[in-house]
Length: 579
Image (cartoon, rainbow, N blue to C red; front, side, top):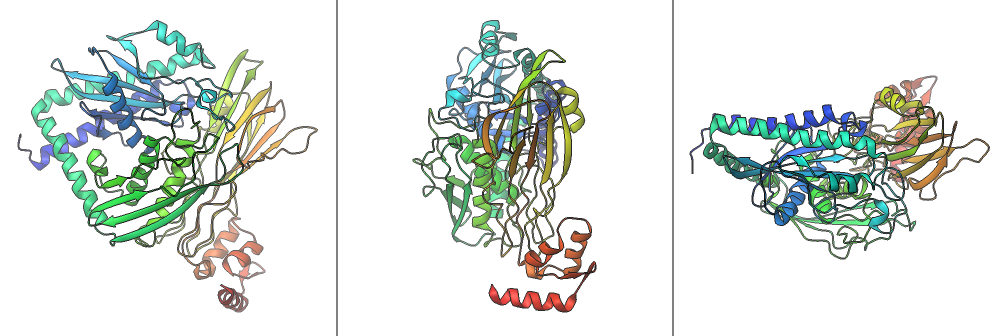
């Protein structure tokens, strides 16, 4: 084994990450769809040649893809045959190390000096892959075929040339197919950029040195993660979270998370969770595992990411629950929604063990909203897909962030100007969801309120969101955050509210109709009665809460725009006794 000095190790580590960053940037800059080019719903990485284990991922890659992409790459490796430079596999099968069908993976063998040195892979969220509704988020699906086209690992590129027959099959089974070729070429081009940059890194430092650095980085990541886990007291911890419903049966789905910490290992057991469900809230095992990985990475963000990071995490397969979906269970909500409930259960379990390091639950939904229709002025069909932010939970260090990205990623809402330029809609409102921050000594951040008006033509709206029944959990005495709400306003009809609150599909809308969405706020941290009255007054002056909410949630009495200290003391004492 080549001896590695610390400086070389650090430089090679940065070089590997830079290769992934450049793939990310190339993908974003060349992609056609705003969900990739603007919302950044994608990820690129480098994976081990034998088992697909993660070597490096870009700084801007979605955390939920950290686990799923290495599982998905492993499935491709097991099926790959007769490889040569320029080959590239496409796959979106959720049961083969994936998420939902809209997350399409490209996996490419990386050759150096005539041999496979590693695999390069990326994932991009396509705005449509066919299925019952535009956008693929079929809230009422009862089998995966209703969600879209399912692709096993197949060679889309052979020796650097695209297979026109496979491409034709794909484009014949998805909506707005003419727009998809731009994303396909961008996704493939990103991996080509990765090949060039990775080759330059190997040319500069040599194969043996880079190989030795990869091994050492994995060892060190495991060592660092074990050191972090050692700070958790030995014992058993329990957390619970709920998915509102599966979109078909209007009953909550329970995630029962039991964590046993021994020495420097964490053992996860979810066998007490709800059984497989009829609707699309089932989670494939790759997504379930990855959700735990990202939750622990949230708790210990200093540990670098590679396969060694997750070696101390032992996850028992939750067979017989909705967290281990098998064909043909529908899964469109697994990555965007169920994954965040899994992370929330991990946070809830470990908060008593790490009260100074953890936080109340964040909004925990990607707010998946798809609108598909025909634009008569432009003479073309479209699929608009929006994700939206929500409030983060409060923590020991302060109040939660407002309108933050989801737990599972760094994706952002597509800029309003881009949405209105590309689609026949008008964003009439985009504002904070006042009052949604959960009460606490440190309150939760706020979600957002937005309104989309259809300007012309007809369309079909679909929603797969969550936290419409109960808000994100408070921690250490803090209150839950505000809930998700969806309302459709149609001329001449009573306002429509989905029976599952934040899940529905195929809602017909036309010119002038409005879709109103409110996203959840974060949970509160600590006893709300301990929040400084001055902080409550500041929130009131900014319009975050009403006077009535200040009294009910925080026990603070406001008179003529100022804190009534005597009345506040009495109210807090009376409220504290009731508690």
